[in-house]
Length: 163
Image 1 (cartoon, rainbow, N blue to C red):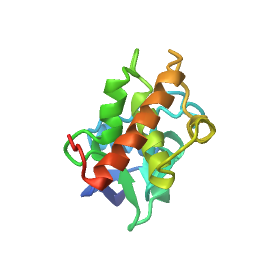
Image 2 (cartoon, rainbow, N blue to C red; image 1 turned 135 degrees about the vertical axis):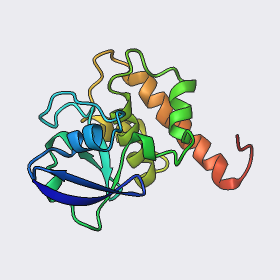
Image 3 (cartoon, rainbow, N blue to C red; image 1 turned 45 degrees about the vertical axis):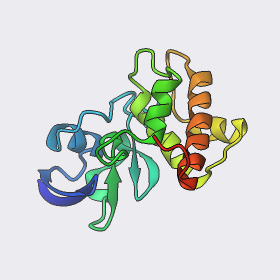
């Protein structure tokens, strides 16, 4: 066992765990944040997507020992900073989820996409979201929600019609 001091959603979290423990289980079992899901356990489905220093990362294959003291971890619970983000609102407005299981990973990938590319094309979206699987097949609604969020973000930047 080893002690790790993590920056998780802007808060300091101290955990005493095995060095090879995947970050997914640290987040779920020790930080008690249940939004990040276990999917395949092999970093192939995207259900466990988090942000590590602002970039999408698969928590199921990221050992806690690989997290540096200055690294910043953000989960689905941390992207809205206490309220729903524009992307989360777009997800609801476009009725994206069916079963909902993959949605936290989908939203985390979409958030990273829009941060790096605020006006993505369909091809940009498809490429950025290709690592996130949805067994319900809501890919068209996901694409629509990302476009909606992109437009909402532009409006919010101009300070017009904020919600």
